[in-house]
Every structure is written in structure tokens, then in C-alpha cells.
Amino acid sequence: MKRSCRGRSNVQKIYIAMHKPYAVPNDAPYVPLQVGAEGKKPFGAARDNEGENISEKNPGYCELTGLYWLRCHAEADVVGLVHYRRYFVRRHWRFYRGEKRYLTDADVTRLMEKAELVLPKKRHYWIETTYSHYAHAHHESDLKETRKVIEELCPAYTAAFDETMGRRSGHRFNMLIARRELLQEYCDWLFPLLFELEKRLDTSGYDDYNRRVFGFIGERLLDVWLCQRKQPYVECKVLETERPNWLVKGVHFLWRKIRGNRTVSR
Image 1: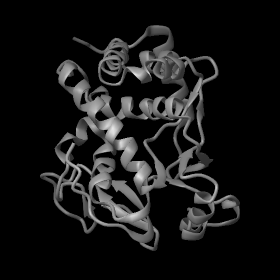
Image 2: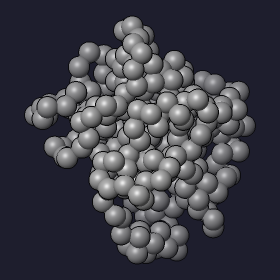
Image 3: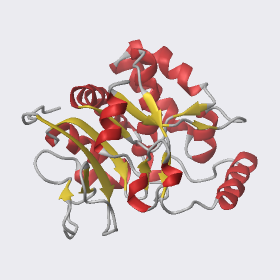
């Protein structure tokens, strides 16, 4: 991976991954970032197709094309990535309205004093493991091939992969806030694995949802990296600005559990 990153400055920036115009915070520390910008019309945000980038991979990598761009181009001491419909929120967020619920510069500073990495609160599955949940929702072969790639490229992480796949909770969304150097270390481990996995997986028989495989796998690999490194972190609640339909999600989950994933896989 080319490492032509720029200098650093004493600021904190949280980039908002977005693929369409949307009402988002414009005050510090927030910076809108258009992901999958390659070939798309600009809408006034920073674009992940400027300089070194993998913007064209966005259909499979989702917000990770933004993370790759941050690894190469973000200049702040502390760098974060959130979604245009998901934000880290303040401790007493229920007492605020609108954008005032989201982390401020002062909140980020306070969190960085506790650890160099801020992550969403874990998602708990209770009756599923990380492995079985993925296998029911996507293609189990993705995980099997991922394990092979780890065995070949970084075998010291194989035991951590097995351990995290057996857990009943995990960090999701590919959201984080980190010291810039730590974010770079994570990216320098993550992306070579995903690029190699991309060479090996035939996704031509996948539907559009499952073609986002590298974004989904990236979510799971974060915990593998944390486990092996014993990396300290703090968790922060994530607020979804558009309320998910938990009834529909629950029905889909039970249907996949009973029926299995019948999407064509080669």
C-alpha cells in the first residue's frame, strides 16, 4: 500500500460518510465525505476519489473506501468516521435535540484521554455467534476464505479470528475515532487482507446486498485486530437518525435462521 500521507495538525476531525446529499453537521469537528464518489456528481463534500483512493470499490467496500481515503489524506491528530445516519452521541444525549446530541470537540478530547480508540457499543446477538450470524445473513464461504487469507498473510492472527468468530457480540458499522497513527496501523493491516480476499471471491452470483461483502467482512475483522493486539478502547453509544424497523429486521433474522441463506453462491 502506498503511504504518501501528508503532515499532521493539532485538530480533531470526524468525517461523515455519505453517498448522497443529506442534512449533516457542518460545525467542527465534522466534515462531510462523499464515498463512492468516482463517476458521481459532486455535492459539496470532500470526495474519496481525490488523490490515492479506492473509490471505485465502494459497491463492495461501502464506507471503507472512505476509511482508506482517510488513511492516506486525513491530516488531523485525531480522525473519525461516522455515517450520515449514524453518529456517536454525548453521555447525556437525551437532554439535547438535533445535532447537539452528537459528540463535540470537547467530548472527543475527553474520550481520547481515556483511550486512543473510540468504538460503537458492541452489538449483542445472544442466540448467535458472530460466525453463525454472518453465515445466516450472507455467505459462509466468505468467512472460510477470510480465515485462509489470514492464515497465509498474518498467521499470528488466526487464533484471534477463531476466538472472535465464536463470540456473541461485536463492534459493527465500520465507525471509529482514533489517533491518526493508530488508524493508519489498523488500515495497513486491514486493507491488504481485503484486497487479497477480493482476488479470491467470485461475487458474480451474489445479489447487490451481498456484494457489499468486503464492508461486512471489514466490520468483523476490526475485533480480530483488537483481540490480537489487546488494543485498549472506549465505547460510545451510536444514534441512528432514521429509526430502524426492528420488527422487519427481527422477521428477516428469524427467516434466515430457519431457512438459511439461499442466495446463489459460486
